[in-house]
Length: 215
Image: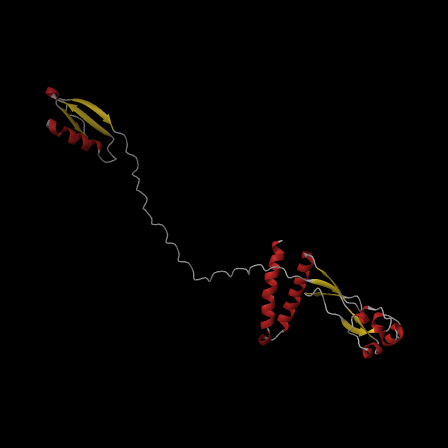
């Protein structure tokens, strides 16, 4: 017979029996002594069957995995930032005094120049005959300017000046884009030793066109 002081240990052993044991027995003998066992009690004891709950599956804790190592940054050179936008240049649309054709200039006040009188579509006669000998009584601006010599007048030349006006933002951007395209064409056609000025001009135009894109 099991001593009363050993009952807790025996009960713990019965409760923790392998999963194949489903029933335990409480045996109460003469004098009220109580024992627990996994086999039926003897005939001279009172027996009480105890159904044990079937233990659930033992869950194995998931292994703790270390976070993946952060791959070292590849030695990739930083991206080249776009060139900063440059202020738009002040451009002028000029019209030639001789034939009316237009061109783009950075100078809105072009210098006068002498052209044959016949280029302007006037009567092909000497200016000396038109304005008088030696310039007497002449009213033409070129004679009043004081830069025309008698020899120049005699050779049928006249002073003219192209008319220019400032270009607006849209016209300026369109002109810069045209200049960029023309420069790119020259850059592709140039030998490697000749590409330096075109590369420099390309960078200048890109900086100015960035201002156009921002708009």
